[in-house]
Every structure is written in structure tokens, then in C-alpha cells.
Image (cartoon, rainbow, N blue to C red; front, side):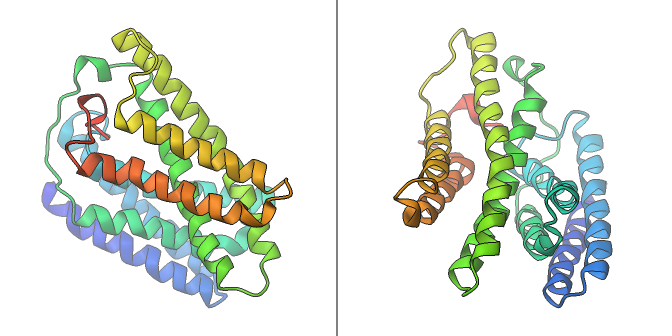
Length: 253
């Protein structure tokens, strides 16, 4: 089964990329169909990961990247129906492609055994909440880059705000559930390890963005958004890739 993973990931990534191009060419109907097909292939990878590890496939960065990309299509349809943001399909498609491409090149080690602390009812809600928030933050950041290159910024800025407005409660839940989980597992809500500190920095910078855009400093809100996403990348990637910054408490993610 593991031999199927890379071909399926490549097919899924290509599907997302082509669907993004179709959205850019104003062929939204075809783009949605192709993005849905890529999502189903992505889902097949998740199922295979679960069958291979005989557990919830959230044990390493590769498995988490697969879940991250899966979050976006349902969220895109939600924003299309609720906020009339169907025109953002290109950004959701490209944001879905990025973690899928990353997963192609990551170590796909087979089995993993959850340590006792991870055998908790908080495991899936905590990780999934962060994946949803991070996925939406990636979309919002791609839109921020587009915004800086565009003359008509009002619609893009409104969409960025609406997307982050949904992402932030999930990020908040992820952080709070992590604290409750830590207290249940280790007897303390906070241990000041690198992952926790950078998660708090990320959350705080997004909070600065929300407050900033409503204040006299609103012209600097986009810079707070930029710093927040850079902190998110540090939390999600850099802390895990640099052994001295990582910790056993968060080595699974």
C-alpha cells in the first residue's frame, strides 16, 4: 500500500494546481470539479495512511500535511455558501496544493505508536483545530500577497478578514485544548517549551491584526498579518525541524 502514496499525492497536487489555474481563468465550475477530484485522491491517501499505521494518521509532519490539505475544500464550500466567497477558489486550490507537494518529499515512515500522553480524547480535537486554523491562515496569507500586488484591494481585504475571523477561534480552541490536555497528562497547563511559546506568539500577533484594523493604526494591520504568518511557519515547521527547539511533548506534530 505504501507504494501508492507518492503517485496518489502527485495526482492530488497536480489536480489542485490545475484547478487553481482554472479558477484563475474564470472557469470556476470545472475548477470546483477538478478540486473535488483532487480532494478525493487526497482522502484516499489519508485512508491508506490510517491502514498502514493502524492508528489515527497524525503521527508525523507528513501525515499532518495530508490532513492539512484536506481541510480546505469543505471550508471553501462553507465560505462560498455563507459569505459568497466562491471567487476565492484559486487561493483555496493553491493553498491545498502546497502541503500536498510538501508531503511528496517527506519521510513516510510506516508505523508509529502513540505514547501514553497522546492517548487522550484531546488528541484529535486539538490537532484538527490547529490544522483548520493553519489551513485558513495559509489561504489568507496567499490572498495578502495578491492584495499587495493589486490596485483594487477592498474585496480582497474583506475576504482576508472573513477567513481569519473563522480561523482565529479554531486557533484559540487549539491552544486552550492543548493547555487542558497538558494539565491532564503532565499536571501543568503550560511548560514554556518552544512549540507552546511560538503558538502563543502566533495567536497574539493575529489578535494584534484584529485590533489593529479597527484602530487608528489600521494601515499597519497587514504587517501584523505578515508577522503572524511568519510566526505560524516558525511554529509549524522550524520548531520541528530544529532539534534544539523541539521537545518530546510536541515531537508528533
